[in-house]
Length: 314
Image (tube, rainbow, N blue to C red; front, side, top):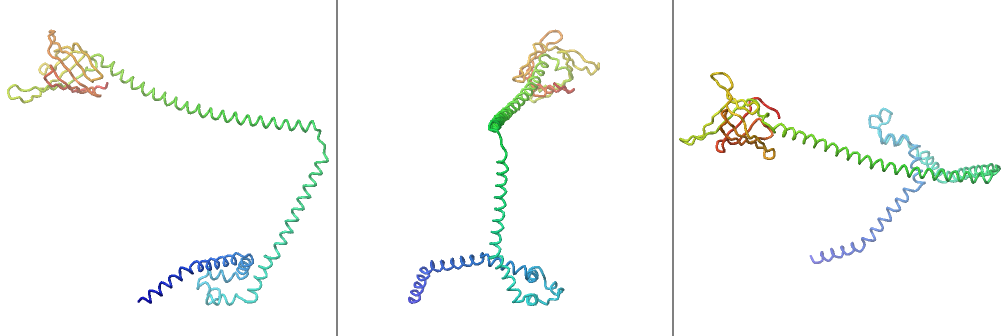
Protein backbone atom coordinates (compact mmCIF):
# COMPACT_ATOMS: atom_id res chain seq x y z
CA UNK A 1 0.00 0.00 0.00
CA UNK A 2 2.82 2.41 0.82
CA UNK A 3 4.44 1.64 -2.54
CA UNK A 4 1.24 2.51 -4.35
CA UNK A 5 0.92 5.78 -2.50
CA UNK A 6 4.54 6.63 -3.32
CA UNK A 7 4.02 5.87 -7.01
CA UNK A 8 0.83 7.97 -7.02
CA UNK A 9 2.67 10.94 -5.49
CA UNK A 10 5.49 10.60 -8.01
CA UNK A 11 2.99 10.48 -10.88
CA UNK A 12 1.20 13.53 -9.47
CA UNK A 13 4.47 15.47 -9.20
CA UNK A 14 5.43 14.58 -12.75
CA UNK A 15 2.00 15.68 -13.98
CA UNK A 16 2.33 19.03 -12.22
CA UNK A 17 5.83 19.57 -13.62
CA UNK A 18 4.99 18.61 -17.17
CA UNK A 19 1.57 20.37 -17.31
CA UNK A 20 2.96 23.76 -18.47
CA UNK A 21 5.08 22.10 -21.16
CA UNK A 22 2.09 20.07 -22.35
CA UNK A 23 -0.13 23.18 -22.48
CA UNK A 24 2.54 25.01 -24.51
CA UNK A 25 2.69 22.13 -26.98
CA UNK A 26 -1.09 22.11 -27.38
CA UNK A 27 -1.13 25.89 -27.88
CA UNK A 28 1.62 25.67 -30.51
CA UNK A 29 -0.28 22.91 -32.29
CA UNK A 30 -3.50 24.94 -32.54
CA UNK A 31 -1.54 28.04 -33.55
CA UNK A 32 0.15 26.15 -36.40
CA UNK A 33 -3.18 24.61 -37.39
CA UNK A 34 -4.86 28.04 -37.51
CA UNK A 35 -1.95 29.43 -39.52
CA UNK A 36 -2.24 26.61 -42.06
CA UNK A 37 -6.01 26.82 -42.33
CA UNK A 38 -5.95 30.60 -42.85
CA UNK A 39 -3.19 30.35 -45.47
CA UNK A 40 -4.38 32.01 -48.74
CA UNK A 41 -3.19 29.07 -50.86
CA UNK A 42 -5.07 26.55 -48.71
CA UNK A 43 -8.27 28.62 -48.66
CA UNK A 44 -8.06 29.20 -52.44
CA UNK A 45 -7.59 25.48 -53.04
CA UNK A 46 -10.61 24.56 -50.87
CA UNK A 47 -12.85 27.06 -52.67
CA UNK A 48 -11.65 25.98 -56.11
CA UNK A 49 -12.11 22.30 -55.26
CA UNK A 50 -15.69 22.87 -54.02
CA UNK A 51 -16.56 24.86 -57.16
CA UNK A 52 -14.94 22.41 -59.60
CA UNK A 53 -16.41 19.31 -57.91
CA UNK A 54 -19.76 20.90 -57.10
CA UNK A 55 -21.75 17.66 -57.55
CA UNK A 56 -20.12 16.06 -54.51
CA UNK A 57 -20.79 18.79 -51.80
CA UNK A 58 -24.30 19.46 -53.12
CA UNK A 59 -25.16 15.75 -53.11
CA UNK A 60 -23.72 15.20 -49.62
CA UNK A 61 -25.42 18.23 -48.07
CA UNK A 62 -28.78 18.55 -49.81
CA UNK A 63 -29.63 15.13 -51.30
CA UNK A 64 -31.40 12.26 -49.58
CA UNK A 65 -31.01 8.58 -50.47
CA UNK A 66 -34.20 8.54 -52.58
CA UNK A 67 -33.08 11.62 -54.50
CA UNK A 68 -29.70 10.02 -55.21
CA UNK A 69 -31.49 7.04 -56.73
CA UNK A 70 -33.44 9.37 -59.00
CA UNK A 71 -30.15 10.68 -60.42
CA UNK A 72 -28.81 7.12 -60.87
CA UNK A 73 -26.64 6.78 -57.73
CA UNK A 74 -27.06 3.89 -55.34
CA UNK A 75 -25.19 5.51 -52.43
CA UNK A 76 -23.12 8.51 -51.43
CA UNK A 77 -19.94 6.49 -52.01
CA UNK A 78 -20.98 5.87 -55.62
CA UNK A 79 -21.73 9.61 -55.98
CA UNK A 80 -18.18 10.46 -54.82
CA UNK A 81 -16.45 7.75 -56.82
CA UNK A 82 -18.19 8.63 -60.11
CA UNK A 83 -17.59 12.38 -59.82
CA UNK A 84 -14.11 12.33 -58.28
CA UNK A 85 -11.20 11.91 -60.65
CA UNK A 86 -7.96 12.00 -58.74
CA UNK A 87 -6.06 13.62 -61.60
CA UNK A 88 -8.50 16.21 -62.86
CA UNK A 89 -10.38 16.81 -59.54
CA UNK A 90 -7.10 17.51 -57.71
CA UNK A 91 -4.80 19.24 -60.20
CA UNK A 92 -7.31 21.66 -61.73
CA UNK A 93 -8.30 23.22 -58.33
CA UNK A 94 -4.59 23.29 -57.36
CA UNK A 95 -3.69 25.17 -60.58
CA UNK A 96 -6.52 27.64 -59.99
CA UNK A 97 -5.43 28.28 -56.38
CA UNK A 98 -1.79 28.77 -57.47
CA UNK A 99 -2.92 31.15 -60.21
CA UNK A 100 -5.04 33.17 -57.76
CA UNK A 101 -2.35 33.24 -55.06
CA UNK A 102 0.77 34.02 -57.13
CA UNK A 103 -0.40 35.47 -60.46
CA UNK A 104 -3.40 37.59 -59.55
CA UNK A 105 -1.62 39.87 -56.98
CA UNK A 106 0.93 41.20 -59.54
CA UNK A 107 -1.89 41.75 -62.04
CA UNK A 108 -3.85 43.67 -59.39
CA UNK A 109 -0.77 45.80 -58.64
CA UNK A 110 -0.43 46.63 -62.33
CA UNK A 111 -4.10 47.62 -62.52
CA UNK A 112 -3.78 49.86 -59.45
CA UNK A 113 -0.63 51.48 -60.82
CA UNK A 114 -2.39 52.13 -64.14
CA UNK A 115 -5.35 53.79 -62.39
CA UNK A 116 -3.00 55.92 -60.28
CA UNK A 117 -1.12 56.97 -63.45
CA UNK A 118 -4.38 57.97 -65.15
CA UNK A 119 -5.43 59.98 -62.08
CA UNK A 120 -2.05 61.77 -61.94
CA UNK A 121 -2.24 62.72 -65.63
CA UNK A 122 -5.80 64.00 -65.12
CA UNK A 123 -4.76 66.19 -62.18
CA UNK A 124 -1.77 67.56 -64.15
CA UNK A 125 -3.92 68.48 -67.15
CA UNK A 126 -6.54 70.17 -64.92
CA UNK A 127 -3.84 72.27 -63.24
CA UNK A 128 -2.40 73.30 -66.63
CA UNK A 129 -5.85 74.28 -67.88
CA UNK A 130 -6.56 76.33 -64.74
CA UNK A 131 -3.15 78.03 -64.87
CA UNK A 132 -3.85 79.19 -68.42
CA UNK A 133 -6.61 81.52 -67.19
CA UNK A 134 -5.87 84.84 -65.50
CA UNK A 135 -7.90 86.38 -62.65
CA UNK A 136 -7.15 89.96 -61.48
CA UNK A 137 -5.82 90.12 -57.91
CA UNK A 138 -8.40 92.73 -56.87
CA UNK A 139 -11.26 90.53 -58.06
CA UNK A 140 -9.73 87.48 -56.38
CA UNK A 141 -9.41 89.21 -53.00
CA UNK A 142 -12.91 90.67 -53.37
CA UNK A 143 -14.32 87.18 -53.86
CA UNK A 144 -12.42 86.01 -50.77
CA UNK A 145 -13.80 88.91 -48.68
CA UNK A 146 -17.33 88.27 -49.94
CA UNK A 147 -17.04 84.61 -49.01
CA UNK A 148 -15.75 85.48 -45.54
CA UNK A 149 -18.58 87.97 -45.00
CA UNK A 150 -21.15 85.44 -46.17
CA UNK A 151 -19.70 82.80 -43.87
CA UNK A 152 -19.75 85.25 -40.93
CA UNK A 153 -23.33 86.31 -41.76
CA UNK A 154 -24.40 82.66 -41.97
CA UNK A 155 -22.69 81.88 -38.65
CA UNK A 156 -24.40 84.85 -36.95
CA UNK A 157 -27.72 83.80 -38.46
CA UNK A 158 -27.34 80.28 -37.09
CA UNK A 159 -26.50 81.67 -33.62
CA UNK A 160 -29.52 84.00 -33.71
CA UNK A 161 -31.75 81.14 -34.83
CA UNK A 162 -30.50 79.03 -31.93
CA UNK A 163 -31.26 81.88 -29.50
CA UNK A 164 -34.72 82.33 -31.00
CA UNK A 165 -35.43 78.61 -30.73
CA UNK A 166 -34.38 78.58 -27.06
CA UNK A 167 -36.51 81.68 -26.37
CA UNK A 168 -39.46 80.05 -28.15
CA UNK A 169 -39.06 76.91 -26.05
CA UNK A 170 -38.92 78.99 -22.85
CA UNK A 171 -41.93 81.08 -23.93
CA UNK A 172 -43.87 77.93 -24.81
CA UNK A 173 -43.13 76.43 -21.39
CA UNK A 174 -44.19 79.66 -19.68
CA UNK A 175 -47.36 79.76 -21.78
CA UNK A 176 -48.22 76.18 -20.83
CA UNK A 177 -47.63 77.04 -17.18
CA UNK A 178 -49.85 80.13 -17.49
CA UNK A 179 -52.56 78.03 -19.15
CA UNK A 180 -52.35 75.55 -16.29
CA UNK A 181 -52.57 78.38 -13.75
CA UNK A 182 -55.56 79.90 -15.57
CA UNK A 183 -57.28 76.50 -15.64
CA UNK A 184 -56.67 76.05 -11.91
CA UNK A 185 -57.91 79.58 -11.23
CA UNK A 186 -61.06 78.91 -13.27
CA UNK A 187 -61.69 75.68 -11.34
CA UNK A 188 -61.22 77.52 -8.05
CA UNK A 189 -63.53 80.27 -9.29
CA UNK A 190 -66.23 77.70 -10.08
CA UNK A 191 -65.88 76.15 -6.62
CA UNK A 192 -66.02 79.55 -4.94
CA UNK A 193 -69.00 80.57 -7.07
CA UNK A 194 -70.82 77.36 -6.13
CA UNK A 195 -70.03 77.94 -2.47
CA UNK A 196 -71.19 81.57 -2.75
CA UNK A 197 -74.42 80.44 -4.40
CA UNK A 198 -75.01 78.05 -1.52
CA UNK A 199 -74.34 80.79 1.02
CA UNK A 200 -76.59 83.25 -0.81
CA UNK A 201 -79.28 80.60 -1.17
CA UNK A 202 -79.17 79.74 2.53
CA UNK A 203 -78.96 83.37 3.68
CA UNK A 204 -82.75 83.33 4.08
CA UNK A 205 -85.41 80.74 4.72
CA UNK A 206 -86.46 80.29 1.08
CA UNK A 207 -84.43 77.11 0.74
CA UNK A 208 -86.69 75.54 3.40
CA UNK A 209 -89.79 76.03 1.25
CA UNK A 210 -91.59 72.80 0.48
CA UNK A 211 -93.05 69.67 2.06
CA UNK A 212 -91.28 68.07 5.03
CA UNK A 213 -91.76 65.14 7.37
CA UNK A 214 -90.71 66.01 10.92
CA UNK A 215 -89.80 63.11 13.24
CA UNK A 216 -89.60 63.88 16.98
CA UNK A 217 -87.96 61.29 19.23
CA UNK A 218 -89.89 61.84 22.49
CA UNK A 219 -88.94 60.00 25.64
CA UNK A 220 -91.94 58.61 27.52
CA UNK A 221 -92.29 59.93 31.08
CA UNK A 222 -93.86 56.69 32.22
CA UNK A 223 -91.41 54.00 31.12
CA UNK A 224 -88.63 55.96 29.39
CA UNK A 225 -89.31 54.44 25.98
CA UNK A 226 -88.61 56.52 22.85
CA UNK A 227 -91.77 57.42 20.94
CA UNK A 228 -91.36 58.68 17.39
CA UNK A 229 -93.96 61.30 16.49
CA UNK A 230 -94.22 62.05 12.74
CA UNK A 231 -95.67 65.38 11.60
CA UNK A 232 -96.22 66.45 8.02
CA UNK A 233 -95.68 70.16 7.46
CA UNK A 234 -95.37 72.65 4.64
CA UNK A 235 -92.98 75.61 4.84
CA UNK A 236 -93.44 78.72 2.72
CA UNK A 237 -91.49 81.98 3.20
CA UNK A 238 -90.72 81.08 6.81
CA UNK A 239 -94.28 80.08 7.75
CA UNK A 240 -95.03 76.57 9.05
CA UNK A 241 -98.28 75.03 7.83
CA UNK A 242 -99.70 71.80 9.20
CA UNK A 243 -101.92 69.58 7.07
CA UNK A 244 -105.42 69.29 8.52
CA UNK A 245 -106.62 65.80 7.64
CA UNK A 246 -110.26 66.58 8.43
CA UNK A 247 -110.49 69.83 6.48
CA UNK A 248 -108.03 68.61 3.85
CA UNK A 249 -106.20 71.92 3.90
CA UNK A 250 -103.05 73.56 5.24
CA UNK A 251 -103.28 75.43 8.52
CA UNK A 252 -100.67 78.08 9.43
CA UNK A 253 -99.24 77.31 12.86
CA UNK A 254 -96.02 79.25 13.37
CA UNK A 255 -93.39 81.50 11.80
CA UNK A 256 -89.59 81.28 11.73
CA UNK A 257 -87.85 84.06 13.64
CA UNK A 258 -84.21 84.84 14.41
CA UNK A 259 -82.96 82.61 11.59
CA UNK A 260 -79.24 82.25 10.98
CA UNK A 261 -76.88 79.61 9.64
CA UNK A 262 -73.17 78.80 9.90
CA UNK A 263 -71.70 77.26 6.77
CA UNK A 264 -68.43 76.51 8.59
CA UNK A 265 -70.12 74.21 11.12
CA UNK A 266 -73.03 73.26 8.78
CA UNK A 267 -75.60 74.36 11.33
CA UNK A 268 -78.98 76.14 11.17
CA UNK A 269 -80.71 77.85 14.10
CA UNK A 270 -84.14 79.43 14.26
CA UNK A 271 -87.00 80.11 16.68
CA UNK A 272 -90.59 79.12 15.94
CA UNK A 273 -93.23 81.59 17.09
CA UNK A 274 -96.89 80.75 17.06
CA UNK A 275 -99.46 82.77 15.15
CA UNK A 276 -100.24 84.53 18.38
CA UNK A 277 -96.58 85.56 18.74
CA UNK A 278 -95.55 83.15 21.48
CA UNK A 279 -92.33 81.18 21.26
CA UNK A 280 -93.23 77.56 20.69
CA UNK A 281 -89.78 75.98 20.12
CA UNK A 282 -86.13 76.51 19.25
CA UNK A 283 -84.43 74.44 16.56
CA UNK A 284 -80.72 73.74 16.22
CA UNK A 285 -80.17 71.58 13.13
CA UNK A 286 -77.16 70.24 11.23
CA UNK A 287 -76.97 69.64 7.50
CA UNK A 288 -74.51 67.95 5.15
CA UNK A 289 -73.83 68.41 1.45
CA UNK A 290 -77.43 67.41 0.89
CA UNK A 291 -79.84 69.95 2.40
CA UNK A 292 -82.78 67.61 1.97
CA UNK A 293 -82.14 66.05 5.37
CA UNK A 294 -81.64 67.94 8.64
CA UNK A 295 -81.05 66.53 12.11
CA UNK A 296 -80.68 68.16 15.51
CA UNK A 297 -82.61 69.11 18.62
CA UNK A 298 -85.78 70.93 19.42
CA UNK A 299 -85.65 72.93 22.67
CA UNK A 300 -82.19 71.37 23.25
CA UNK A 301 -83.64 68.10 24.57
CA UNK A 302 -85.83 66.50 21.91
CA UNK A 303 -84.10 64.93 18.96
CA UNK A 304 -85.76 66.03 15.72
CA UNK A 305 -85.23 65.04 12.07
CA UNK A 306 -86.38 66.95 9.00
CA UNK A 307 -86.81 64.95 5.79
CA UNK A 308 -87.86 66.74 2.63
CA UNK A 309 -90.52 64.90 0.67
CA UNK A 310 -90.17 67.08 -2.45
CA UNK A 311 -86.46 66.83 -3.36
CA UNK A 312 -84.81 70.23 -3.45
CA UNK A 313 -81.47 70.88 -5.17
CA UNK A 314 -79.40 73.69 -3.73
